[in-house]
Length: 166
Image (cartoon, rainbow, N blue to C red; front, side, top):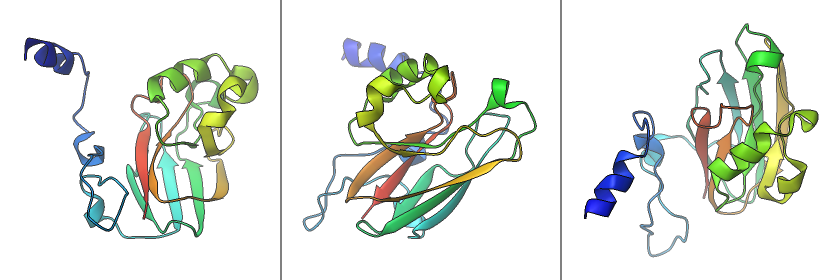
């Protein structure tokens, strides 16, 4: 019990993460893990997500139909320069360790913070955007829960969310 408390106390700021925690509960007909709060999100395969100068995405939960084309548009609505506050939208394969990927991404400035050594961990990504820019990605996801992040150095801890493909 002491170990559990010690580990829980080292978790950092989780104030905005309670709505995006995946659990291992599964319904009898569905192998997709449930994500708290997903029942309050409409299913759509066309989403626009905004990133801002406060290192936040305006959308933390996305719900889509698996097996159908998904379009996500990322808009950088901030005003700070791309060199100090660029944003991208990176969909990671299920099971990828976000902290490890984020650390590798920080050293990949030459590839818009998408580490070439970890391309197998990425489902899809936008280009790195400066203020007022936008980019669109199209992908078809299998049933599952996918994490998405901004891989600009230091952003992945706050700029993140989940896509539930059902």
